[in-house]
Length: 322
Image 1: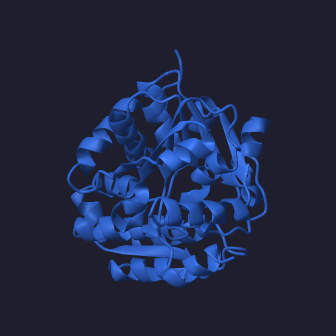
Image 2 (image 1 turned 180 degrees about the vertical axis):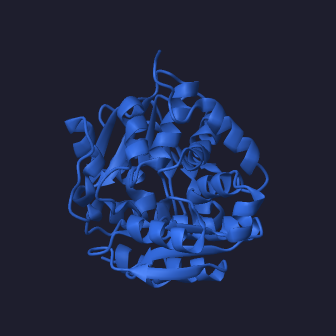
Image 3 (image 1 turned 90 degrees about the vertical axis):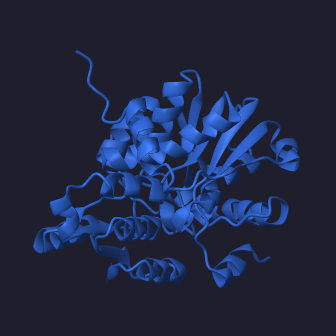
């Protein structure tokens, strides 16, 4: 008997029904200039316009909303570099419970402030010396909280897949889907949805050059750890793929492209100047891969997920200057 996949297309459809009217159905952006530059018809799914400014709200709400009344009464915990933190904090507030979030002490101020603004308690740690998973698990066990991980959870993965589901519903048949990769939850859910709907579609992940753990892992056929990446794409600063997400991505993802921090900056600048939209570094990486011609061969109709836009004005100006 074949192994049952941890997340199915039906799970993504179920998640879509659960978040309907709560998460935004974000717009799909087109640009003739972009099409001409890359030589394809490009459809940009603007998750930078999602609630909390990133796709993460989809998975967080899908997971938290499935907790029992007793679990919700005790509260939830999470660990995150920023966007999942905000997503769990807002999901908890929407569902009438409390959240405690473990975050790196060097998390961009905009993400820290937003997470606190949604009512969460924040516990910080050093991302280069601390183990956020161990800290989060210990905290949840000590306080009796339900732990909602950023990607190692089938309900989280299914929720993230709703972004690709909506994109394909609006754009129609696509030849390729290009998705940023950090821990792998977004691309795992997106690949599940995309290949469930369009079996022939090519799914390409994009990582920063300094954090190519998923690329190395797919090439090795096993999870490979890299030093904690030092990159402007803080949302993609993973050192090893998730076990659950890797099991999905090893089966469904066709390849990984790498982009430099400078190429990410160029994409942020292009999105601001030509598309009139703001994306954070991690949110710009998939667009960066197209603009830098890192996705080859590039087919005719391509979907791209702009995964988030959580960057403060000062930091954004600093990144795109020059």
